[in-house]
Length: 93
Image (cartoon, rainbow, N blue to C red; front, top):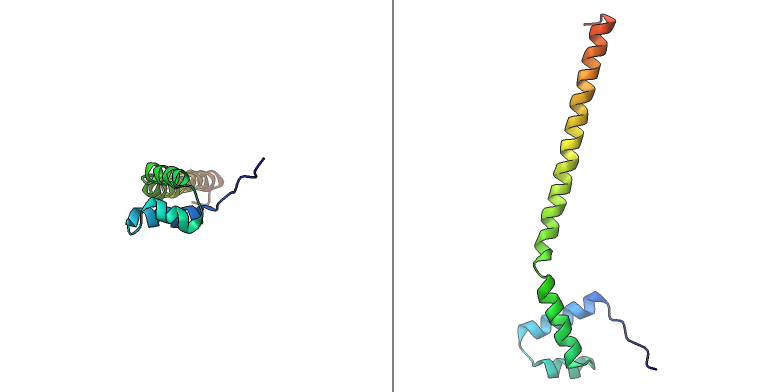
Protein backbone atom coordinates (compact mmCIF):
# COMPACT_ATOMS: atom_id res chain seq x y z
CA UNK A 1 0.00 0.00 0.00
CA UNK A 2 1.45 3.36 -1.05
CA UNK A 3 1.65 6.21 1.40
CA UNK A 4 -0.32 9.28 0.36
CA UNK A 5 1.61 12.46 -0.15
CA UNK A 6 0.38 15.49 1.74
CA UNK A 7 1.10 18.83 0.13
CA UNK A 8 1.08 22.12 2.04
CA UNK A 9 -1.52 24.68 1.05
CA UNK A 10 1.20 27.07 -0.11
CA UNK A 11 2.43 24.50 -2.63
CA UNK A 12 -1.09 23.79 -3.87
CA UNK A 13 -1.73 27.51 -4.30
CA UNK A 14 1.50 27.92 -6.26
CA UNK A 15 0.55 25.09 -8.63
CA UNK A 16 -3.02 26.30 -9.11
CA UNK A 17 -1.87 29.84 -9.84
CA UNK A 18 0.46 28.48 -12.50
CA UNK A 19 -2.49 26.65 -14.05
CA UNK A 20 -4.62 29.80 -13.95
CA UNK A 21 -1.91 31.85 -15.68
CA UNK A 22 -2.30 29.45 -18.62
CA UNK A 23 1.37 29.75 -19.61
CA UNK A 24 1.62 25.96 -19.65
CA UNK A 25 -0.91 23.17 -19.96
CA UNK A 26 -2.08 21.22 -16.94
CA UNK A 27 -0.18 18.19 -18.23
CA UNK A 28 3.06 20.18 -18.50
CA UNK A 29 2.67 21.54 -14.98
CA UNK A 30 1.82 18.06 -13.68
CA UNK A 31 4.99 16.68 -15.25
CA UNK A 32 7.04 19.57 -13.87
CA UNK A 33 5.94 18.85 -10.28
CA UNK A 34 5.49 15.07 -10.74
CA UNK A 35 1.78 15.26 -9.92
CA UNK A 36 -1.33 13.80 -11.46
CA UNK A 37 -3.19 16.16 -13.81
CA UNK A 38 -6.42 14.98 -12.18
CA UNK A 39 -5.13 16.06 -8.76
CA UNK A 40 -4.21 19.48 -10.11
CA UNK A 41 -7.65 19.83 -11.67
CA UNK A 42 -9.26 19.01 -8.31
CA UNK A 43 -7.08 21.58 -6.56
CA UNK A 44 -8.05 24.15 -9.18
CA UNK A 45 -11.77 23.40 -8.78
CA UNK A 46 -11.53 23.64 -4.99
CA UNK A 47 -9.53 26.86 -5.26
CA UNK A 48 -12.11 28.48 -7.53
CA UNK A 49 -14.99 27.20 -5.41
CA UNK A 50 -13.59 28.80 -2.27
CA UNK A 51 -12.22 31.98 -3.87
CA UNK A 52 -15.16 34.11 -2.78
CA UNK A 53 -14.52 33.31 0.89
CA UNK A 54 -11.26 35.24 0.76
CA UNK A 55 -13.20 38.48 0.81
CA UNK A 56 -15.84 37.26 3.26
CA UNK A 57 -13.25 36.68 5.99
CA UNK A 58 -12.30 40.34 6.06
CA UNK A 59 -15.93 41.33 6.35
CA UNK A 60 -16.50 38.86 9.19
CA UNK A 61 -13.42 40.16 11.01
CA UNK A 62 -14.79 43.68 10.72
CA UNK A 63 -18.14 42.49 12.06
CA UNK A 64 -16.39 40.83 14.98
CA UNK A 65 -14.49 44.01 15.86
CA UNK A 66 -17.67 46.08 15.49
CA UNK A 67 -19.60 43.74 17.82
CA UNK A 68 -16.82 43.86 20.41
CA UNK A 69 -16.82 47.66 20.23
CA UNK A 70 -20.60 47.82 20.63
CA UNK A 71 -20.45 45.45 23.61
CA UNK A 72 -17.81 47.62 25.27
CA UNK A 73 -19.87 50.74 24.61
CA UNK A 74 -22.92 49.09 26.14
CA UNK A 75 -20.92 48.04 29.20
CA UNK A 76 -19.45 51.55 29.51
CA UNK A 77 -22.95 53.01 29.41
CA UNK A 78 -24.11 50.62 32.11
CA UNK A 79 -21.13 51.45 34.33
CA UNK A 80 -21.75 55.18 33.86
CA UNK A 81 -25.36 54.76 34.99
CA UNK A 82 -24.23 52.77 38.03
CA UNK A 83 -21.60 55.36 39.01
CA UNK A 84 -24.11 58.19 38.67
CA UNK A 85 -26.63 56.27 40.80
CA UNK A 86 -24.00 55.57 43.47
CA UNK A 87 -22.95 59.23 43.56
CA UNK A 88 -26.57 60.31 43.94
CA UNK A 89 -27.23 57.82 46.74
CA UNK A 90 -24.02 58.70 48.58
CA UNK A 91 -24.68 62.44 48.38
CA UNK A 92 -21.47 63.25 46.47
CA UNK A 93 -23.29 64.86 43.58
